[in-house]
Image 1 (cartoon, helix red, strand yellow):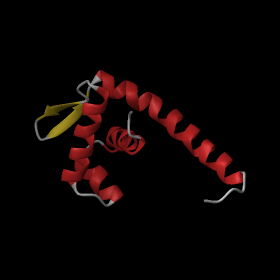
Image 2 (cartoon, helix red, strand yellow):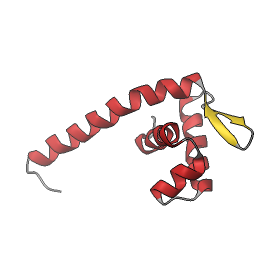
Image 3 (tube, helix red, strand yellow):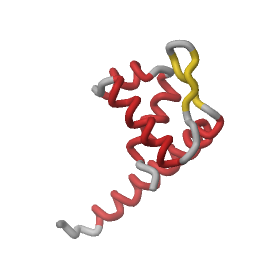
Image 4 (cartoon, helix red, strand yellow):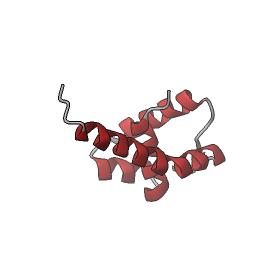
Length: 90
């Protein structure tokens, strides 16, 4: 199963360009972001990042994931809202 939080990190990397920028924006360490993205690569079973000097760039597979991530996250938010609207509390 693909972790949605990790997908969101990949999308942030796509938008912000560097792991350091993602870490700063989300109040994570760069190491934590790198580890989460490595876990995502393991989950999907294909390389997502390629080192390019001191930076990384997204592979075509990563670009494909980013393309679909927005829709997936929107659907999850809609589901959470619908569940909250039922009025049932745990």
